[in-house]
Length: 118
Image (cartoon, rainbow, N blue to C red; front, top):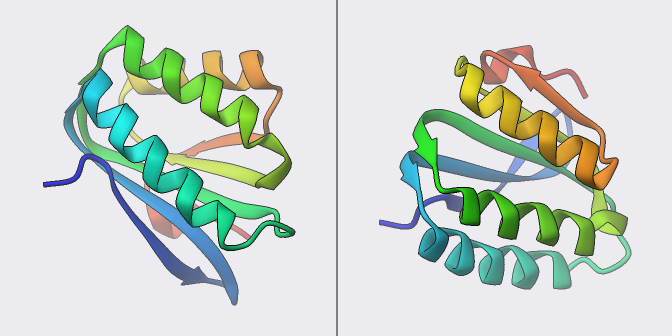
């Protein structure tokens, strides 16, 4: 199983790239997902894309996975409109805050996908 699952969805008439994370997010998961992430954004080079990170199924993550993820956010910053993080976990909220500070991206944390307002 891919962790995270990466797929395009429609939300409020917008194309959104959704990442659905499960259990523990490891460095090897990050490497595979980053490759897929780059491929997907390469198909829409002129677009700024809404990202949805569904972390409700994530229990924890490796520091190295978060570091790789942050670096990729910085690399792809010009194509990221906003990142919505869905979680109830304090650990994941703190990780999202670290990524936001490191990348200066607009990251919003909500507790359910229904709370996303585009």
